[in-house]
Amino acid sequence: MAIITGVSSPKARRAVSAAVFCLALFISGRISYAMPLAADTAKTDTGAAAAKAAPPPAAKAAPTPAPVSYPRMRIELDKGGEIVIELYPFAAPKAVERIASLVKSKFYDGLKFHRVESYVVQTGARETDLPPVEGEMFSQKLTHEEGMVGMARLPDDYDSAKAQFYICKKHLPLMNGEYTLFGKVVSGMELVQAIKKGQGIKRITIIK
Image (cartoon, rainbow, N blue to C red):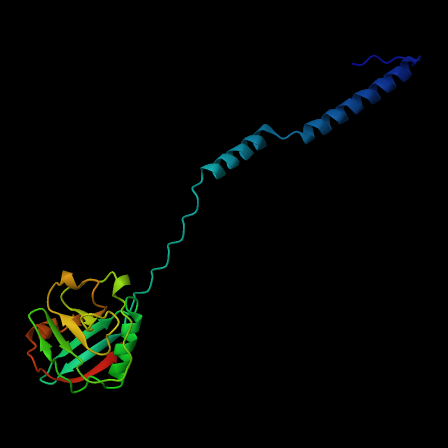
């Protein structure tokens, strides 16, 4: 109890003491009310710890890329059978553009495989006023494997290809970097292997 000074009568001193005591209780009550309870503090700390321990949300799976689809051309042989060639504009855009343009104009319809060797067959021997296609062989990663298709050219000029193309019958590493490859046989390779010199082409068409 605080000592009250400056008040003479006992009654007055008791009244003042009572008032001081009530004031102290009031102040003490406000202070206690403002302090967080131990249980609340523990609850807050536990929540924070749980939040820290919670694993991060799983990353969304990347969408599956759509399969790449390349244009194809179909060679119909005059004696029956089809050879399907997938074209690679990513490797030889100029060559593919030229071949596709000639196919659409029916340039190859009725021609023959005029050259047949143990390692290639070749067609497209027809006069044309089209300018030569710039060689694209130096930037290519494609290699001469069985079924690969390339532009024929003059022996001493990399930029002389016009319309003739060949199909590889076997692995030909010495031709890598020397000729522009623009596609690959994806169906009918057994027909390519069986082609004889003079075998005719009924028609060639572009398919998807």
